[in-house]
Length: 423
Image (cartoon, rainbow, N blue to C red; front, top):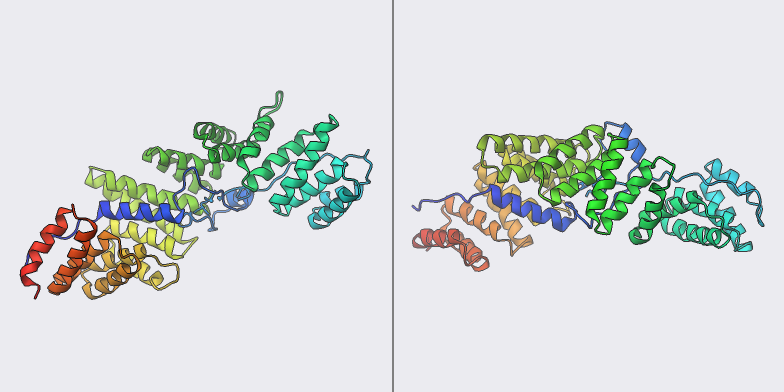
């Protein structure tokens, strides 16, 4: 009977999972979309919400403030327009509707006035503010653009309207257009920068590749409001992109303490712990990080129980050697439409490590059908066949793996080991 070497697991699991998360849009760097979540309520509650980065929403978003992730993260709190009582059009009633938060009625009336009086900046402005509150961001940006254009042409610039336009641009993902307006809004002399406008500025800088500027903006927000979980979330993303795992973990712990509903935060925190554990040279520290990843994963699955979230949680459980628990969690999502080859692969690994090889084989065979070019599936599948003395199938699995990774010595050794028994 051949002597088998169990495939090494930790580095492969982390590599596969990180690649999966990147493909799924869970770990997001410069392309992260902010997610749509209510910023105020998110920061005041301590019970689950949504912001998948397995999640995240995420928070990537970090919506309005949008927050993934997996985006989270933007929160509509438009500045209040100043009523214009001297205007070709009588906008007083439309403005009253806006003040009363009857946004749909305000938008309808203001747009009708704007059509009748196309050069009336006040009508366009009220329409834009109402649409911003209705989360009709593209329409809001278009109408606020018109208002700002008319204000500037008449030399009656209104900083509030320009700030709202910058916000509308961010929420409609026009980051290049948003940035100069938001820089102006946060650098006006004689006024304290508004933390919300600074947050939007950070988003625009982050999305346009100005990462250092974004980091500065988000840090300023956190100085003004240490409990701003969404700014902390983005600072953690920036730290992860630099592979500053300690900084990212500390920042994400702050973010999730401040907002237990920040799905993107829990997702990134779980991932960061897994990455640090996999690269640690100290077994005791690695074990502690895997247990911390499990705790972060528990925070995540309180908010989301889809296959992506459970797959990440399952990886944490496998890393902490809680194989039966990992198999039970992964089994529940293995047949759902959003189950991926990675989900099935990890299920197979969990069953294999728990010595339930028939179920491991079933899961790994399903993973091979779903991801036929994933080399590690054949490594695990070959091992499961080999330990159950199905040598011909083991040989075929190892040969398939070797064809995908011809320079991998493990497959060569495994082929030579089982070939005499494969008849």
